[in-house]
Length: 308
Length: 249
Image (tube, rainbow over all chains, first blue to last red; front, side):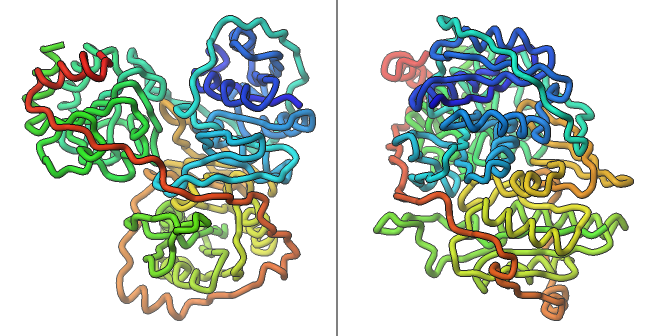
C-alpha cells in the first residue's frame, strides 16, 4: 500500500518541511502527496515535481483555505483506508491535524519520529530528547508526524507525478479562521537554514540582537533565540529554539550568550557543528559545543563578523 | 460556563531522567513528581476566566494512579473548585486518555475544556486534538490568548512564523502554550483550603472505555552522547577551525 503525505503550504508555496516528510515516506512505500487548500494549484504543481512522489491529490475548496484541522481531518480520514501510513511534518500545522485524524480513525498517532526502524516501528524522542523510545504500532493505518531535521530533504525537482483532483471538504461549522500575523523576514527560515545564529539572555536586550543580525547577514544565517531571551521579550516567540520551540539541525549553530539549559539543547544538539560564545566558562553549552569561545560577546561577535 | 481542565502527573521538569537498566522505561522510583507545566498554565487560565466572571465553575480532572490526587490538590489550591480522579494503575496512552476525557465531558457538560499542549514526559502533543475529534468540536491548540464570547471563544494560536486567530463554537477544546499566562504561586492558606474541596474518585471501568495501549514500547535508551569539543582562545582560531577543520565556512 502507498503512503499519504500531507503537504504543508500556504496555498502559494510548498513548505520545505514537506520534502523531509517525503523522504521518510519513501522509506515506507509509494508516496502520494495530498495538497489541500484553496487556489493551491501551484503547490500541487510543485509537489508533482518532488523526486520520489508518484501521485499528487489536489483538494481545492474554500473550507480548506486555512488548513483548519476540523475540516482537513475528515477529508484525510476519508482517504486513509487506501494507505498504510499517513505522514505529516511535525510542524505546528502537522501536530495540530495529525492527532485529530488518528482519533477519527481510532488509531494511536506516533509523534515526531526521528527514525523508521520498520514499517510499524519508529524511534521518537521523549523527555525533551533526553531519552529515545522505540515504539511499535499495531494499528491498521499508522498516523505519524516526522521531525524534519532527522530526514534529508527530497529533491524539489526531478519528479513528474500526475495530479488527481479530488473532492473538497465540508465546513465543520465549529471553527472559523479569523486572521493571522506572520512575521516577514528576509532571512532563511530557522528550521531549514544552513547556519543559525542564536542569542540568549546574555544579549541583555532586544536592541543588542543587532550584533547577531550583522553576523547572520555575513553568514546568510537565520536568527534564533533561547527561551530565556524570548521570555524576556528581546525577540518574538517564533525565534525560539528548544524543546517547546523550533527544532533545528543546521550545518553550523552559533550560540551566543546562551547558557545551555536542557530545554534549549533539546532543540539544537543535532546540529553538525556547534559554536558557543559565552563569558561563563562553566556554562553547560560548552559541554555540547565543538568550539567554545569564552569572553565578552559584545567584543567577540563584532570581531567574528569583521573577520569573515 | 463550566470549565474542565485536564492535568497530568509527570516527572518534575528539573529532574534529569534516565532509562531503566533493562530499557523498559525511565527510572521513576524516588523521583520528584509534579503537575505537567503546560497543565499548570491550563489551570491558571481557567481560574483567571473564573476570576474575570467568564467561568462559573472550574473542574479539574486527572487520570492515573492514586498519587494523582496530589496533582489535583495542587490545582485546587490554585483555585479550581472541585476535582475528579479517574483512578487506574494501567498504562494510559493519549488515545485512551482522550476517550476517558470524552466520557467525563459527556457527564460534566463543560463549555470549555483546557489541557496543556503536551506533557513533558512523553512529549506526544496529541490528547487535546484527539478529545476535540471525539467530541466533534473545535480545537484551539497552542493557545497564547483565550477570549470567551457569546456561545463562542476566540483563540490566538502560536503557529510557525507567527500567530493565527480562530473562532470556535462552544463547547470547544483548548490546549495551552507557554505564553498563555504565568501560573501563580500557591499560598499556604490556599493549600489548606484545597484539602477541604471535593475530590471524586472514579474507575475507568465505569465509563466502559477500552484503554488497552495501542503502541508497544520496545526499547527506551539514551541518545548518542555528543562529545564536548575544544575551547579556542581567539576569534582568529575559531574562524580557522571552522574553515579548515569543520569546513562549514
